[in-house]
Image 1 (spheres, rainbow, N blue to C red):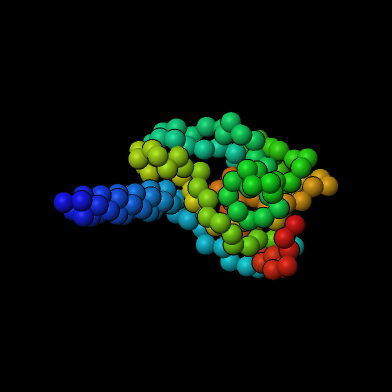
Image 2: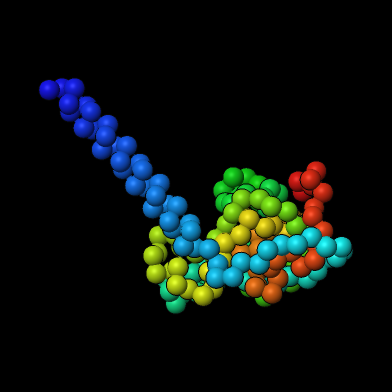
Length: 166
């Protein structure tokens, strides 16, 4: 009898993990932008990009993020919580940054993945493309989902040198 209880509990736990994983994959799939721009490397030395520090939480919600945009020393999500944000710079929407090159990194999205209706929002964006940017004397990485649509897609910039970490 005791063996059956353990087997039933184990089976239930496995099914819950599979279900949670499936829901996560579906949410990430539904968060993808309408028309993602594929980055093509070029020979452009630099390009101006504009911050769009907005997030969406529903089908019609698209508002300024309550957390200001920061630059990262690494191309990973939630860098500020992992001790790799660049000190001395934060920005809201409309700030211009000088992009020097781009590289792939962690994928990010501007969508609240817990909101099923957000997948219908035309402003949704997800990307693994990161720009290495300069803001005055400060340099660091920013994911393109926090830039205006016109500032996405590589902009003909070159790929960053692989040794560039900051």
